[in-house]
Image 1 (cartoon, helix red, strand yellow):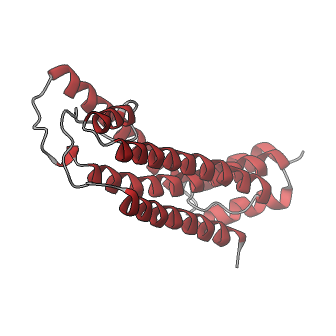
Image 2: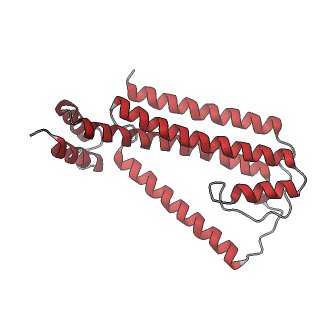
Image 3: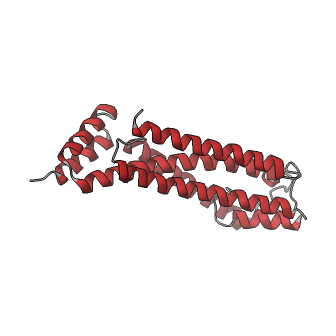
Length: 215
């Protein structure tokens, strides 16, 4: 079993365990999760700044402090997992200098998509507040169960992607700094064989090899 596969498996197990534990916690400790929260200003995503405060405030105002605390706790552990796995992925890549997992091309596609979604969410939130749209309060956006149901899987996906991207970045940086001729040659050969000779990763590998090759 290769190191890369072990890393992939490890991250998969961690995010899977997080999703199961978080879901069990929510189901076991949550109360009236299907009941609409009144006086709640719709938010675009749990990832947006201010969403947690708005939802916790709405829950407290509705007399549901236990659910408010539960929501804040799940948000905290979700961000902690995303941060920890991303940092661990980078460290793993630096220490092992192994083959890339996600690949530079896919990583750029994911980062572009995430940036686009974040920009769209930001613009949507600004538009909602600026236009003062009259959105009915008794909708899916005001149900705590929906908040948890969207937060948990999205956090797991983001943590996994973040870990793989960070792993690849750490590995490429470590290989470039070490400048070992054999490893540089392996980097180029692997990138061309797995990703394609004209892929962004293969071009980057050749550039690193050319710049860092001794002599």
